[in-house]
Length: 225
Image (cartoon, rainbow, N blue to C red):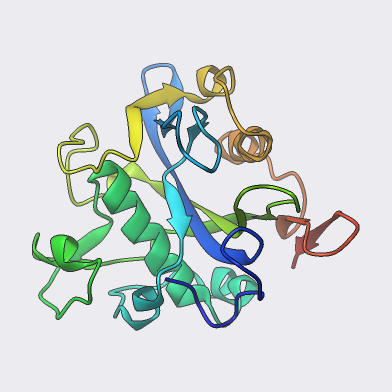
C-alpha cells in the first residue's frame, strides 16, 4: 500500500503519503464543496467531516494518467507527483463514486478495475495542488497529505450521483463554503477550507503552496515555491 519513500516505523507511527481532493462547483448561493463524514469507529478522525482522500497505494505509481497537473504543480509535488495525483483520483472515485477521467481503454492494476470498467482513463489535468500538511506526532495515523482542488465540471459523471461510492464516508453532500466551515471538522480541514475560500474568491493568501510540516521535533510552516 505504501510508497518506498515513506518514513520508517510501524503502521501507527510511519508517515504515509496521501492525497485529498477538494471538489468544487457553483451553487445557487456561491461555490460549493463536496464533503462526507467518517465513521464513528474510524481510527483516524472519527465522526469528522472531511474531503475524499487517503493513502497512496503502490499501484498508483503505475497508472498511465491521461493528463497531468500543470507543470508548476508537478514541480512542487516532486518525484511522487504522478502517483499522488493518481491516488487523489482513485480515492475520490472509491469514496464518492465520482470519476475524474476521459474516455479510453487501458489495463488497470488492482484497485483501479472499477474505474477502468467505466471505459475511463484517469485524468489529472484538472487537479491543482493547493496545500500540504503532515499529521503531528502522537496521532493514531500519520499522513503526508497533499490537497488538490478540482472543478466538478471535470467529472465524467453526474456530480450528484453517489451510487458507486463505498461506505467509508457517509452523508456525502455538496455544501456552500460558509456552511461547510460550520461543520465538525478536523483542524487541518478548517485551515484548508479557509485557503480554498480565499482562492474561490480570487484572493491568494501568498505565493506558493502552504505547507504545515510536522515531520521534525518542531512544527514549521512554510510555502512551497
